[in-house]
Amino acid sequence: MKTTLLPPNKDPMGQAIADYFNRGKAAKLRVFSSQFDEDEIPVDQLFRSYDDMPALEQKALQLAKGKILDCGAGSGCHTLALQAMGKEVQAIDISPLSVEVMLKRGIKQAFQVNLFDEHYLEKFDTILMLMNGSGIIGKLENMPAYFAKMKQLLNPDGCIYMDSSDLRYLFEDEDGSFLIDLAGDYYGEIDFQMQYKQMKGDAFDWLYIDFQTLSHYASENGFTAELIAEGEHYDYLACLKIK
Image (cartoon, rainbow, N blue to C red; front, top):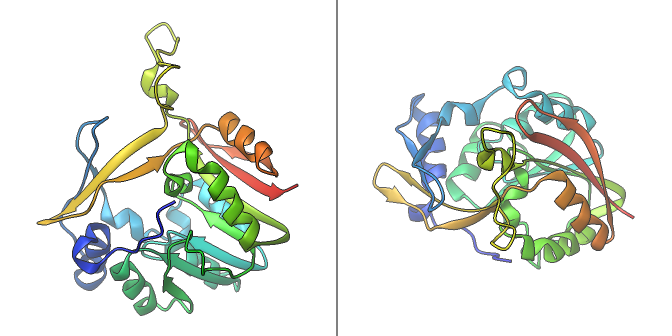
């Protein structure tokens, strides 16, 4: 697993977040992939309030308890909502500019940390991985390393709330069948690269994982997986616990 942090000059999402926070608007945050056409992330959505969050995210925040870790916290919208509920929460992100914004927004604990850093060994009762939180795992081959890290960070009876999406709908034919190459790479393994104005970040791997596959890897690595809720478009929220 990569344990690097982003430098400020390779942090396009962080720069977009900083611009939106400081000026109330941002330019296009462009997203490129070898598998898909160019896309765009609406930066204002990264600042949504609890009432504007999808039901799956609201559910995860309601269920979160004890000492909470918000992974890949971005602008800190989930962390702020949890603080408003009176919950104890720590936010981490590899983006230095995002962490600066979180601190300015009043988040009590926000740190530039890579989740997989071997020196990061705090203990939590709830770990949140939201907004396609499975993405930071990168590839299926990293699942054992991911679960090993979670065992280090979770308290006994702790829970990981992770949302993700099953991308099989992208391969659905008109007759309802799915045209997926089972001999190829897993269809949820995507490469992305972001650009904001003239700043382009490095390419990175991102994992969307269907619940059945998540449950399989969880079981193989000493965890149970429970389907908490399903969204409207092949997305879901799962709870992962140590067996």
